Length: 138
Image (cartoon, one colour):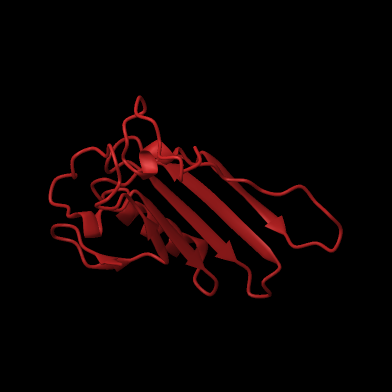
């Protein structure tokens, strides 16, 4: 989805997630948003561009009203290594240090998985005291 911010160029993430019109118990829309452009999680994936360009995209998204999380993924040219960073946006316009980050490589031997966690209440914009639908795992 291509989105815009006032006085800013259009931006399209590699993947975006957010509440739908049918999401039960969701909070009111953020200012200047419709359900169609209500993004709470933006995912930016890079392969040929430098990490700094992904961080620039994260800076753009942290100014987007309604955003809760930004996930950056940088895949090596050979496809065997991936760097990631997850940003938990508490204050609009402020890109904090990542809450989770690291680099891992594809290996032949078994290795523990890398798990990144999200609060589904925040992704779906449902107050913490409200139950999630049985179709959603917390």
